[in-house]
Image (cartoon, rainbow, N blue to C red; front, top):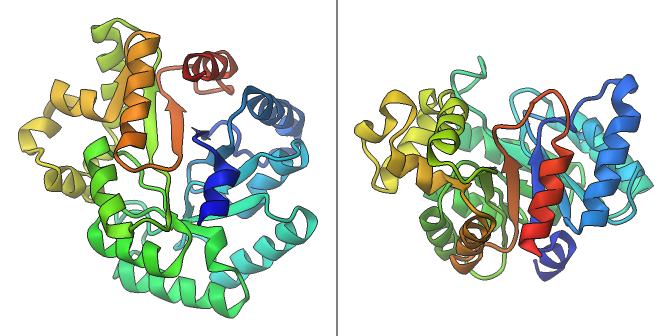
Length: 286
């Protein structure tokens, strides 16, 4: 997937603030996407179980930025509809959209059953509808889903992970597929402020077994999940501190085998795109 690596570049932005389909916000979303492109980010990952249509305003407002769903829930959208919408976007804007897929969580999807088999079936349906495997990536955490990402898609986009997970994922994926983990960033050098913001953000994820099971595979224990997360867990998953420290944390993921790192700003006002923080990230990453 060398072309996909080149297309996405080293860094992208993971955001929920640009995924709104509200017509009134189309201009704001387009302006923010255009600025991200100017800042040098190679991709935008639309979080919060985004839909293919959410990518359209960003693609239309930019000329080379890759827009990805990060992650479209296979329980929320039928494969046939996803494929049809994919082909519409691809026909209008060739090579600008990347379909990120995920099996979500039992607590968030009433239909949740046998997620691995469901993902295989979804990929089968997409393939039957002509969606290229190389334009999809999977939100893979465990070994089995990572193997599926290797064999049936363009690669993996793991969420809420560490450099150690990235190294393990690269070993499973091998050299070819894309590996694009997310990294959460708290832009403050104050340890107390940073960890408080991270705990407020992490709290909901610690109620989802897919994530806690993955943390256990990485050597964390129930003690690390108490009270919003131990300092050890927080510091492993979130980058915070002076600019040089945040840059080193991002580089750790690349050193562990990541091709592309999707950066998520944590602790900013969630009602609007954190454009000032994105500018700072672009500057500190060079």
